[in-house]
Length: 113
Image (tube, rainbow, N blue to C red; front, side):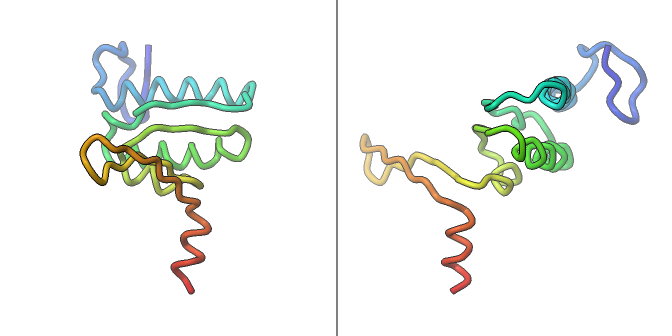
């Protein structure tokens, strides 16, 4: 049984994809509040969510990141905004991939100068 805010009690099968993802990740984050782990890997958890729920998710990631080292894989710009370090793969020419890492705080400091 799941009961997101503003919804009646229902089985998880009656929820949308975003509501299912948010409900599942809420349970996972509750476990981390109870018993924090040293790190957590999340892969495209925010993909089915709408922008309002992605903002909530990103806020919780920021809070959880104070206690736990997070590695999250995403294509969502809203989620990327809470990251301290961005790592990506670029392909300047076909067949040649390069890893690119950016420290967000350092890049912002350079941009401010």
